[in-house]
Length: 434
Ligand code: XLS
Ligand code: CA
Ligand code: CA
Image (tube, rainbow, N blue to C red; front, side, top):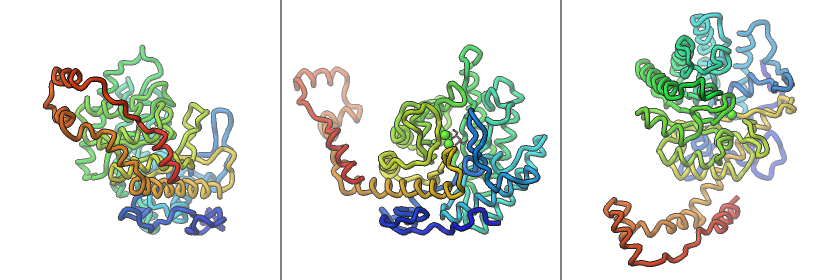
C-alpha cells in the first residue's frame, strides 16, 4: 500500500527551483567542512505528531483523517502508521526516525500483553529498517498519556505507579537496543508538580535520579551502547517540570552524581523557558553535554508548545553556529518533533513541512559555516577576552592571584579604558551571511 501517491523521492533542484516538492538547499551529499550535509544534520522524522496526531486540540477534535488512522483493530492501525512512516522517511531521504513505545504499539491490558504487542511491532520495524535503510535515532517511553501517570512516573508519590513506569522503560530500552537505536530519551512530561505543598520535591528528584541509575544499569546489562538523553522542558503539561532547562538538568545531574546523561534540546522548550534556542544549546554544549536536538519552533505570541516546523533562518543559523563550534551532533541528530497546523489537512502538507524544515537547517548549516570561516566573528570573540591571554589576566585564570592581588592591580591601573561590545557589528556580520 502506497500512502503518499503521486509523490516520489524528493529531489534536490537548487535555489532557483519553483517545485514545492523539491529541496532548494538540502543536498544530502554536499560536503561542508569535511562532512556531508546528511552527516552533519542527521535528520529524523517523529512517529507521534506525524502519524498519531489528528489535529485535535483542547477546543475541538481532529481535522485530519489520514488513511493510516482507519483499521479494524488497534494493531492494524499501528501497522499502517508504521508503513506510512517508513514511506515518508524513504521519500524524504531522511535517514532516521524516533518513537515512543505507544506510538509504535498500542497498550495491552497488562504489562505482559503490552510487551508482547511492542515486540511484535518492533520485529516489524526491524524488517522495515532493513528494507528501507532508515535507522532509529532514538526511542523513548510514553510516561504521560495513560491516566495512571497523572502525578508522574518515576517521580510519582505512589511506588506502584513508579513500577509501571519502570516496566515501560525496560521494554522501551530493550526494543531500542534491538532496533539499533543510537540514543534513548527521557522527557519528563508529568515529572514535576502542579502544587508545591502536596509535593516532596527533594524526594521526587531523588527517585528520578535512582530511576535513571537503574535504567543505565539495565542498559549496561543488555549491552545497549546508545547515548542517554534528558530533554528539558519547563512546563506543560505540569505547572513546573523538573527538567526545566539545560542549566537545571545539568545541576540535577551533578548533584546526583550522574555522568552518563546528555541533553536533547528542543527549540520550543527553550523558548518556553524564557531562553533562546541557541542559549539552551550553548549551555549544554559548554558542559560537553549537547546530545541531540528536537528541531521545531514556537510562536512568539503564544505561551505554549506549538511544535511548528522550523522555518526561521536566524534560529537555524544560530543553532548551527553552536553545533559547529562545539564539534557537531555526534550520535545525536535533528528530530522534527513538529506537527503541521490543524488546518493543514492535505497529505502533501506533511512533505512540504519536512522539506521546509530540512532546507531551513541546510541554510543554517551553510550560513553558520561561512560565518565561522569567513567573517571576523570568531576573531572578534577571541579579541574580546584577550586581556586574559597574557600577564596578570592569565595568572588569574590559572588561579595564581588572590583577591588582594586583584585589589592592588585595580589601585595601580586606575579606571579601565572603555571597550565596546560591538553587538551591532556582530549582528550585521550574521545578517551579511544570511
Ligand atoms: C513533548 C516532548 C516529547 C518528547 C518525547 O513536549 O517534546 O514529544 O520529545 O517524549
Ligand atoms: Ca521533543
Ligand atoms: Ca514540544
